Image (cartoon, rainbow, N blue to C red; front, side, top):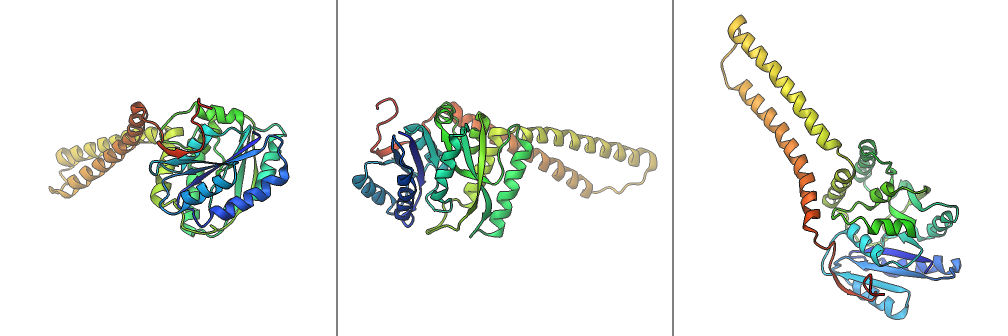
Length: 314
């Protein structure tokens, strides 16, 4: 198998037919000697997405599918596709048609130049609110500045990766996935192609602000310990300020005798110190929660139905 195309699906019934047609129209002219496969990963969709995928699979043997027992999340859906992909190269693309399938031949061609990862970098983003563009821009740049690895800015999961990278990703079993960060951590030669991201073709995005925040936290806690260091530094800073305030209080009480007894300064100090402590405890808690999830060693996902043999049974 030359190429596997992994497509995570969550309530994408309006986009699946057009995506299938466009992918076929792009990949058929490439005349890949070993052929290609589509791996649709149904991440607990509540619409007719599964029925459409099963219908495609009945008509086209190149269409494979995996159905989860519930919604496990976009990154886990991509991971499930990687676990069962047979291609020597793998493309990851969303079903909303914001990322153009027509870019795949150019991405794939770059692999022949000696690269192991070719990611698509967004030049512009159409059909998205100013708030979403701003938060995304800030997240990518903050993440790039605090991590010890080089994670490309303004990129999503749309990319092509070689078999080497797929095998490396399979050996990274952490529960809180941030795949684009993992791929950067793996290394190898990587490059990019720029493109203009289109407006969503149909339906509503499954990436709410809550899910975006979770992904951001997963990315930061998985690849940076800067928040922990910031909590430590802030603790020392606040302790220093508190010590100076204590010295001033003693001076005012016993030397200058210029003070007003009352509760205002006391309450301000308590609230300030308490706020910093709660922030520090919250940051530490985020890391501990992720450690706890990995220690439990629960499976990343539960497959309800599939027309692909599980790994190790092929």
